[in-house]
Length: 295
Image (cartoon, rainbow, N blue to C red):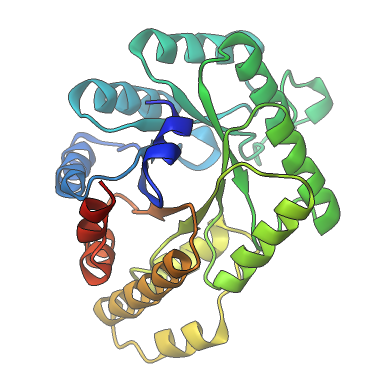
């Protein structure tokens, strides 16, 4: 199903994100997780890359497998850093041949261990990838990333929104945000988008903290992520990861409840390939019952 139709049929649209497994054991664990989450009837699920696009082939394989073996609507992440136009075209062509209709278009992280000159690349920015998809595969749905707390590479917040609008004007159908822990940042981001003339759906990205180590990892991956003092104070009282997970899941649940009360168009749960936190949020907020009422 095209992502635009997904948003028309699901309001709010609750979705999940997975990353591709790196081993056979991890693959079995992931599909066990997906089996647990399918009954929650997500509006769609997305599949990301590993750091630096290191699991590109695994992402493509998983996307095709999920598309053919489940009834889920799939959004595949696609980064363009260090990729040629021919490489990107072949990837998109393969998806198109298998019936995969939706792409999350991202620049991706530049390599850190080798020289990289953007001027020498076929794709320097995500906006160029969006335009490329729109030109060659105009029937595909396209998502782009938004940063409620600011893009780490664009400290000028006015310019940041201009860049985002350029991606929307190039053909993006929706925006899915980076994780955040204070909903006020999201609401402010949405208001600034509307003032700039951005009117596509904006989906809130929520990642429950499931361990203290995981929180530190989030801080490394989501550069600029702001951890509210109240959240840090609660986590400081945790005796172990089990308590940290309860605190993190409770915080995320309160975030989702507030977002739904404020009529957000969608919530994207970063699952880390686990089902416990997402299932808890659904159960606590009665989202399954809500879904039935909306049918």
